[in-house]
Image (tube, rainbow, N blue to C red; front, side):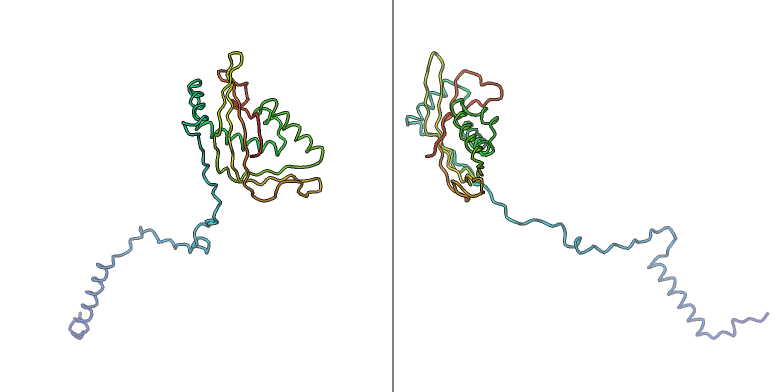
Length: 232
């Protein structure tokens, strides 16, 4: 058999060796697929909303100012009477009372506007409830509606403290001054304002809360009941 190698030009042999070397070199650098590799899944293109991210409401919300709660100076008559009250009722905390009085103020104003007699009966003395009930009845008969919206209670101030004793029972009466920003308007049957203003107005109210000391309140009734309510 004739030896064909002797007939192959030398330069072709050299080119073949160089090509084989380059192939082996590339395989060592890039590696080779074995059939076990995970295919790379195409990544989804985010939609326009996904690219923007979640929507955030940046509208500024009104913040109600903190309520200024004030107790009487200990050297005043009201301050001395307050100290006497605390001596007689060790569980009484005047700061907690002012917070509760503010809550009562908000609830009673709303209940009166809505004609909620049940709530008023549980938070008012008998005489005070009779006056509120009479006003609600007159309003209903006239076809009028009360709109009351407290926007902020800016100040709650304890102005006076009275302690009285009758037949061995002590009664405490605390006078509280409320300064608030309200919308308070009485609307007639025709939908027109009868009194008040359909705009935010600063109002000052003086309320007197009463309580019989050492006497448990009736079930469902407030410990301190509103006895008197008037405008400053």
